[in-house]
Image (tube, rainbow, N blue to C red; front, side, top):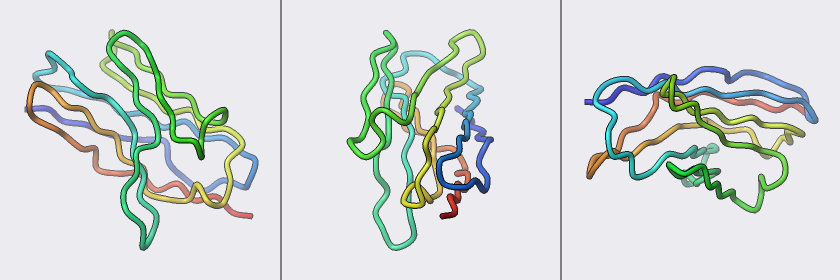
Length: 115
């Protein structure tokens, strides 16, 4: 069993920055996927960024150049640094990992960007 605990969301003005954290605990072996998703009201959950075990990253076009995903293997923690935030980034952000054939979600953290 794996538990994911997110932190770091909040309210920020447009142009500001936030850093989200996702701490994992439990049986964390053979991670097949690590990433961040977001879901805005009335919209489907979408992939924002992902990072491989080797450190390769991939981003949604809408956040490329503004968001940075990273991981600290020693702390079993994944981060999402969000810069130059826009009102359209407002959403609940979820971290997700897939261990073996099982996927796990964080509880979600609200990010609100005011104009």
